[in-house]
Length: 218
Figure 1: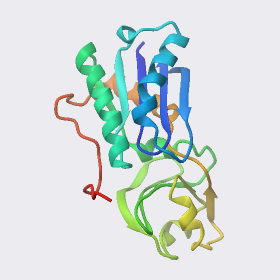
Figure 2: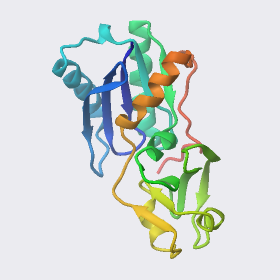
Figure 3: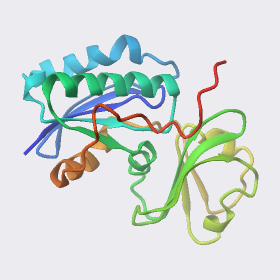
Figure 4: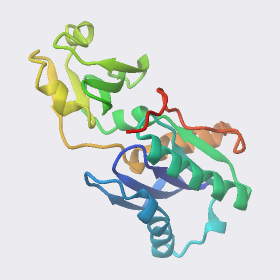
C-alpha cells in the first residue's frame, strides 16, 4: 500500500501529513492567521519524515491541495510537490481544496465550505449529506439570501475562512456556522489514497493550481 505525502497550502494553514496504507502517520500544521509556507513547508515535511524514520525515497506519491485559495500559497505548495515528483519520479495527485474541507463536517446535513476572497466574495461549493458535490466551485458574492435554496431543504453547515462574514448577514434558522476551521492535509488522505489506487494522477509538467480567478496584485 502507498506511502503518500499530503500538502495543504491553499490558506494560512501550512499543513502536511504522511499516510501509509490509508492511515495517517503524522501531521504538522501552522494553524494561524499568517502565511508561513515559504519558511516552514519544507521544515514541516522533513520533521514528519524524521518522526517516522522515513526518507523522501520512501514516498510513493505526493498529494497537493489544488485550490481555490491563496494565489501565493497555492504556488508554493504546487511548486514543492512538483519538485518532489520530478526528483523522485513518483505520481502527483491533486485534491480539490473545498472537497477536503467539507469532510471536516461529520454531522448529517448539507455542507458549504467557503474560503474568504475579496470584500464580500467567497470561493464556495455545495455538498449534499452524502458529501456529493451538487454545486461546482464558484466565486460567489455573499448576500443575505445566498444559498436559500439549500437552507430551505435541510440543515446546512458552513465551514472555512469565509464563514465569519456570511454569519453576519445570514439569519436563517437552518444555517450552522463552524468557525475557525481551515483546510488541513488530514482530510486529503482518503481522497489521495483513492486516486492512487485508481491511477488518477496529474501531468507533473503541466499541472497548475485551480486559481478560479486571475491574480490581482495588491
